[in-house]
Image (cartoon, rainbow, N blue to C red; front, side, top):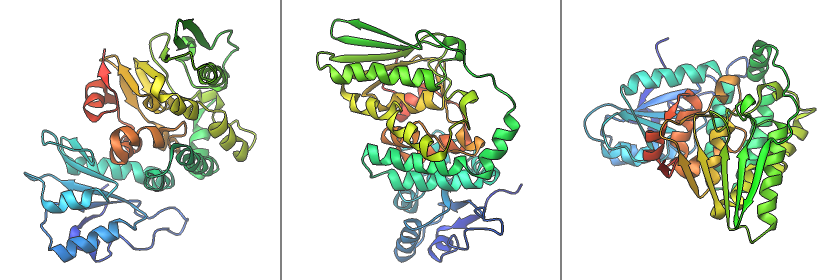
Length: 350
């Protein structure tokens, strides 16, 4: 693969990224396009490029591998979906530092081309929900997630997944301990790597409801038993909802994201091990997020034909910005704790 189309800022200004979006099979054609930020366009060209970037459908990824960031990069990057720069250069929030920006662009293009519908929807959700209140943004995420559940990319992943045994019953999926004015909640299914399945989800929401209903609980501490905080959604439960409307209502009205958000000022989350999917989507709702130095974070959903569905398109952008959230979700790479700290995903390592 030669990689995605790479345009100049002048090309963008002239509308080269605004061609027909859907191909013959109704899949997004060229779902990701690179924008070379190494040039120095005139002010009128830059202004037109910004206007084009503000009204696009495709994923627009800026690339700059020279020395120093030109004014065009700084002015335009806020309106792109992501900007790649070379590692070692100071990289504020719209940027992701990588060893080779053009090689990283090719990898992003491959990921987007492998699941173009999910990638296309992901970009739209991140752009649309950035300025919304949390509850409304969670609805947008869930509407999009339900749409993708019925799509061919998730259907293909589900068919290739194979059989996964359903989780056994559990006596105490979440351990709840009251100690003075602190409520300590521990995800307690280490044999399932604390997978965020129905039993654990419902028990966690019940525990959070205790804190919400009792103002004498001044502090809520959430952590996980076993070698990992949470390995994400239970694979045995993917694709088992009776219908897409019910799946949406369960995610948004019976999930943990909203109560975690409502409790954020009293909430501290401690994570460790591999945090995958919901295991990285839910903790950032807390005011304080503490990670073991060996913790890693990963969003695998796009490779499954989905987008993060436990609140990740809402919680992560409010900590690290929509640009870096897109990078994590589209690539599925592991983010290590020190980088998570420098990005602001976690507050401290301990």
